[in-house]
Figure 1 (cartoon, chains in turn cyan, brown):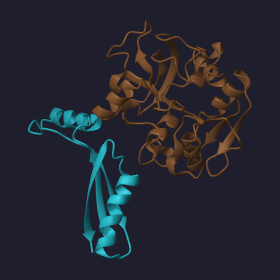
Figure 2 (figure 1 turned 90 degrees about the vertical axis):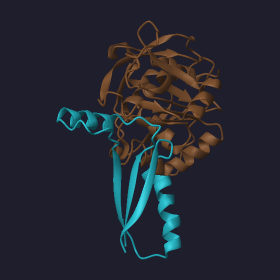
Figure 3 (figure 1 turned 60 degrees about the vertical axis):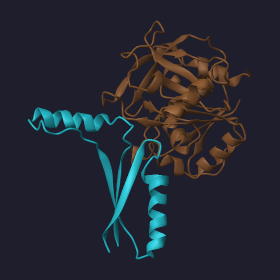
Length: 81
Length: 228
């Protein structure tokens, strides 16, 4: 089973890297781009465990390790059953 | 006062900090290996600068899981003196011993240069040998020093006078340019509510002898070794 976790800055936190990417895209002529937020992707390969356990474990490791909850938020999805 | 300097894989200011404490300030100092569970009876734990675990994931994020950090947390909870310098500050934030988090510097550059910081609170165990408003010239060397805390946390920090140092110009004035990394409220160093844990981005050990261009950092070490 594979899970993908996406960690990005909370909306209230300024993301200077995303801003810089946005500016670069504007320079290239993609003026229609309104905003860019940069984040991190984790793909985690795991043993088959009951759904309930998974739904408890993934937010737990995201909060404890993968994201810093003061500045970051996360979403996750199963990408391979 | 016996100091312990924690060594993580990737620490690179451990020798400088050891030298400043032992040879310049003249205090018994020992190294503490991050994998041990022994604080060797020290009175103060110093988390030095560097790039613990290559700063993988986030600066200081992995170091916080080092075995010794459990002892450091208990030591801090019992009122023990803990100082985090640069990466050590980032580790203390990740550990939750200090409030807030670090973002990338506002200009997205690694900054390695002298800065000026102003003593905001001199009634602390880390700054009582200095004067309120005194300007110190101390170098920084970091990529992630842009201090952030949610509004209500920031308000709390200010209300409790937990801010020890702010970035200023050489005359002690606050301005956008002097706030080199973009930190909220120009925060360069702060302590916990209890006043026994302090973190700062500038490196006092790199400003501890005239030969290094400044000895202003000594005020911090000298404050720590005598009772307030």
